[in-house]
Every structure is written in C-alpha cells, then in structure tokens.
Length: 392
Image (tube, rainbow, N blue to C red; front, side):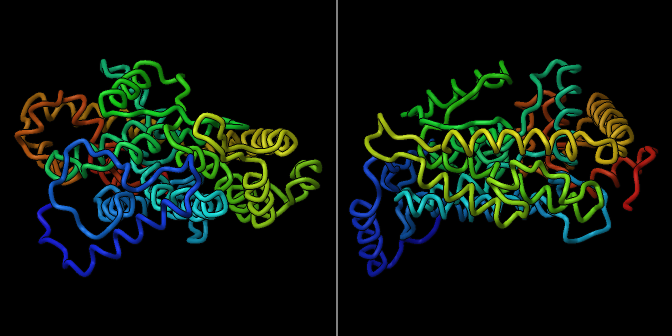
C-alpha cells in the first residue's frame, strides 16, 4: 500500500520465517505464503501475509470503535464489565493458544479473531436484531454482523477500496458464527474470491445457512469465540447481581468448573486434546462428546438466566425505538438532501462521495448506523428527540 521497498536485510528474515513455517506447521495448517488477496500487491514487505492483515485490522477505523460497543451488558456504570474490545482480545489470545499447540498459523488466527466482530452495531445482538428488522422493512437483506464485518474491511474503508485482506482472513470472519453450538468443525476450502463472494451472497440470502470456515484456523476462532464469552459473561452477571455462582448447574461446575478461569482452561485443554490435525481431508477442530454436551448445557443456562433475563432486556424497548427513528430520520434526510448524511457516512466509513453513489440510501443508512458506538448512537438519538436510557 505505497510503502517504500523494505531493506534487503529484512527480506532474508522473512524467508527464514516462511521456511520455519514449513517445518513447524501441521500439514493441514495454512501457510502464510498461501495468502490470496483480491488485488495483487506488487511490492512485498517484510511481514508475513496474515501478520500484515492483523496489523491492517488493528489500524482500521472500525477497530477503534470496538472500545464503546456492547458485548452483553449495556449502560452499566462499571468499567470492569466486558466490552467488545476486550472480547475480541480474549478470543485472539485463547485461539492463539489452541493454535500453537496444534501447530496452526497463529497470525491467521489473530487476524480473524481481531476482525470477527468489527461489524457489530450498537448494543450487541439486540441491536443487530433491531437493525435486521429495519433492513427488511426497507427492502434490504436482514442485517448480519459477520457480513457487515467483511463489508467494512473489504469494501467501505480506505476510500472504498477496503484493506485488501487475504481471502483466508475474510472467510474466517464471515464464518465465525460463535452463537451456534458446534461440537466439531471441519474446514470447507475456498480457493478464490469468486467462490468467497458466492459464499457471502448465499449467507446474505439465507441468514440461517451454516457456513464452515475454509481453514482450520478459522475453525479454531469460531470455537474460541464461545470459550471466550461463556464464562466471562457469567462473571459479569455475578458482578451485576443477575445470578449467583451457586446458580450454575452442578454438572457444569463439576465438569467445567465454576469460575471463568477454570472454564476456559478446561475447554481449551479439551479442544487441544480432542482435535485431530492430520491431512487436510481428515482434520477437525472440536470438543470431546462429554465436554460438548456440558458446554451446550452451560450455554442454555446463560441464555435463560443472562441473555434473555428481563433485567438484561429492560432498556431495549427504548433502544429499539431509537433505532427505528434514527433509520427513518437519516433516510428522510438523504431523500431530500443527500449531502446532509453523505458527509457523516464518509466520516464513519471513509468512503468517497463518488463511491457512495454506488449504494442505495437504505444501504448508506445501514452502514452508518452499524458503524456507530453505543455512545454516539445515543447522542444522535437524543438530537432527534428520542428518549434515551441512562447508565445505572
């Protein structure tokens, strides 16, 4: 991306790193030299392909907005409650630990983990549900945060050029689906951006479609997503007085533990020992049957007692109304004077005015709202006269 050529002294270490990968990585792991980009980049730097992608994601505008996006609990006056910026770091760390023991590509794992939730709208999965409904109401496919993550990184940022990330990273982000309960995952390779684009379009047309990651590294991130949030959400819920530790099902405590640290350790240990990394055709990432069943029970507990609890949902009727009014407000502005909102969309997504002409007004509003932080969303809602919920 228009960098000067690297010193020759740094190209030899790069070759040495690639050679070490060939010796260290499992046969079914993804080599850094196998990275495929939508647009070939003529000048090669001294970073390996997937390490470069991780750096690009870290420097994206969308990554900076993780800092004020809900993970599970919104509008709580406690700085120790998990925000999405911490969640993606936890996913990255857990997934890299698994990858190291399985001799997989840690740079690819890190890049997927850092980018996997970058398309989440304000206020977590409930916000995603509200925005999905508004999209359908206005003739767009239902909003899906994994597709939006790809959209930000591949099409909207960098003046509409995107970050030109590798196929393997974008596929892992598209296919992360951490909310789905999986016992074992086997990759389904994708060899070209034409295939990837068809895969994304199929998911956009059918949100219920289950997509498998193209790499073992993508499979690791998808399962590490659950490992990262399942116990952490319990700890946050205990701090907020939503549940007590004694409420955790006894079988889950016996097998997985009753604290986040113990739960993470036992899940990671099982993933490492139960996964099989051999040939590309026979490898899989997964839990043992016993642990997979226990994890499903713990996840059901979390849904009943935490995610769907009335206290967790108490402020969402107001937030739903804010979503609806903001969407219609911005759409109305665009219909009457396109420049009023185009400037704001440009600030959020770094798309040039010329590129914005390729998007419908509804798509512009979707992308604008999806890029908001929780705080910015509430400020915009207040400006147009919405009643907004307060922190407690």
